[in-house]
Amino acid sequence: MAGKSKTDVAARAGNKNNAKLCSLCGNKVDVVMSVTPTGKKSMRRLCCSN
Image (tube, rainbow, N blue to C red; front, side, top):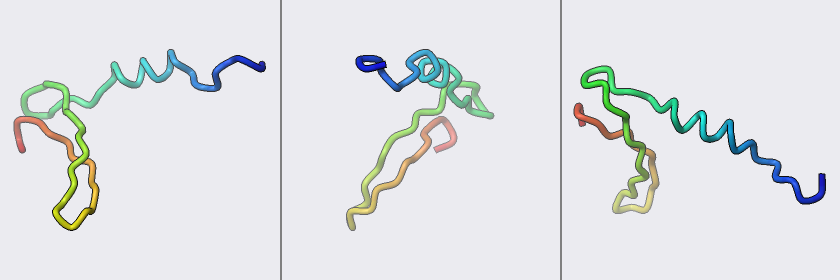
């Protein structure tokens, strides 16, 4: 097992393809990191409703 990756690449690709869909328009919801002026980081989900 010395050179073998511990990450299951197929499982990660499957999760990426099963992205959440918007309940209003049906498009994929983009997840982005936003930083406030005070320096706090938060993950935001962007789609047609935002």
